[in-house]
Image (cartoon, rainbow, N blue to C red; front, side):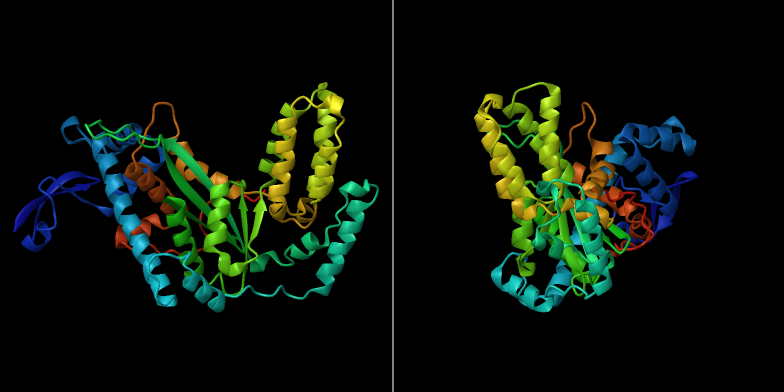
Length: 423
């Protein structure tokens, strides 16, 4: 028998363990009780490691010689994060290998996409005449008294609007960067990127929610498809994406979900309105009232999904009001390139549907930004991704299961506490 120490609520306790168990432990490693593990993890995800150590030592009445060190918490979260990341990757691999013949880690491979297309074809929208009549009535009421350029009239956008939100999976995607730690310089030092980029994906289906996070969009999308397959969300649900329109996100959606072409990918209203406002402010001159009138005129056209009318409006701005033609051309080009991703926001709003990627941004705040984006903070890839993943497990109500059993359920459930309301 060997003597080991256990970190528990009562302090560090010596106890005997079999040699077979001791062989898996490093000389200075402690065994942690489940309650101690969960408490220290929750403190670490909610506070800085320094504050977490202080709270843990105070709540457990630790004396200075037996107090939990800041570095110990940091190292342990990284250790747990590495284990959880490996387990999730293994689980995703198992799911995909079981469903896709010849899968070798690349979901964008043409043969794999063909398999996905055959196994998970786009479901036909449910016929619902009464729902269609209701939509037509709401469109007529909305159009009444408005300028024709602001009417809901693009038939393809009306037809693309889901009739039943319960049979739709809403996926919001966002990227967040945190300051990267400086590496020690050596003779062969190569300057690295200045930020660690975490991808956060918020999945919602019939009121049930789940958060996926990973370093690298390719890794995040692989987990996403495995998650959708595992939870049977590709079989009878439409898939709708929301994002801020970043090119990297659009490229990944197009390549990973080519089997669902045309992919329904919507540009978040907030980011569309913000970008046009910025470009218009730099492109035209005049007083605040004149600029506000222009913004509102364009906004009303875009709200109804009338991108061509908005472009025409920009093209017909009087020359005497143009301050920077390049910025005006940029605004026009922005709308032309993003037209396929601009829905009829007005109709979606009338039906109570989402127009925003806000759930992903809220999840991003809780998973990454609140904890990792403070003055003076910098992170390694493993440090940032580990903390983000452990926080996501807690939001998904999977942390306790992971700590006690080493199993990550990877299930979408109605009881999780991701308070990311749709906008």
